[in-house]
Length: 475
Ligand code: PHE
Image (tube, rainbow, N blue to C red; front, top):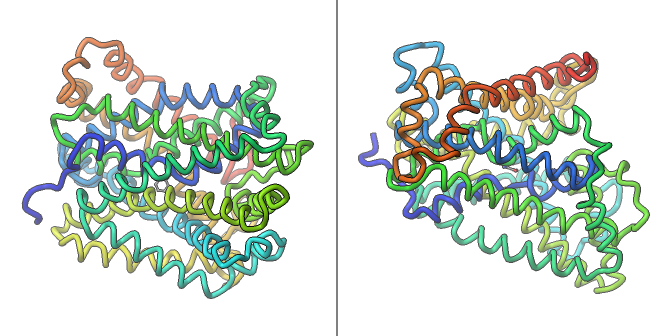
């Protein structure tokens, strides 16, 4: 067993590392696209309400669980479950979920890396041809990129919490903020950019349906890296003197600001490309957007800044997405590593090798499920349609189990660990919390309507993904 637990060196170090986890492909691509298709400002409003009134208390609950126990998710649930075997199950969920989400997220990040390298080689034009994406993801080079990506992530992780995770976040996150703002400023000066801004910000409340609200909720939950054991693990690296409510608010705010700002980059670019665009035709999936649509948009910039300029812009964007994905992957892979260290007494190095070996095999299976291997491509039939191995991992862990994990955290913290103990942990390092409105809200909401909402999201997803119907069809 390792001697003393590792900790983040400073409060800002923790905030940047947790924000690094939260800011990912979800913020830079999925969020702007979802906002565009679902009522612009109306979606932004619903999303912001979800972040601050539903997700933020869940984040505090996860951080408190980790910091109280000084353990990984499996250990945290075990320690506070008072001998109940049943209550250990959420701990296992909080281990398997990040493990599997990391696998499919790694494959998408590998594609981002591949596109980035191609742009550097001067091949932006070829990325815009219809067939390119299909050829690229089925080429052997993806395995080379996968190995490179795993070396980078595990290289960071091998340096530990303070010298690896925290230092990487302190270097990469400020760089990400600066680059994002620079790209936004540039895009806003392009022709027709303002049409995109208007489209993004002006609320269209008619588009707010039950589906849209449920989508906003799922997006907010995923974006804050909840339900993945990450915040429990990172909470265990927090110092007692740091405020959990204060730090959680800073992370949620940063994450939301980055998502909002990304919209100011994507929307004006789309409308510069085509001011008459019908946004209903935009791809729903982030992958479709990143790999099929955005390269075309970036190439179109050559009319005003030349091919070289357009390539630089495209490279900067893909680099941004890559950095955001990298810091998210670092955080998510730290979860199983922490578990092996805490529960099995392994050294950090051994744990890294063990996790990487299994993840490599699974990631290869995911990468081969786009045509390279038939049995992986048509792995299973769900709700009447063929799903690949990649689809299955995404549907099971990202779509379905994530809200379930959130629900279990709320119930466990309030009713098993007990509200009073949780509250005491939140007051530790935060003198002003006792008696505050925030204290009353967090304690009440986590035991009542937040788990109820997460339960609805969970039921709706199961109906949607496995039975091709939805709660909203019943109403
Ligand atoms: N918050 C991340 C995002 O928005 C989600 C994530 C976290 C994904 C950690 C993988 C690992 O993309």
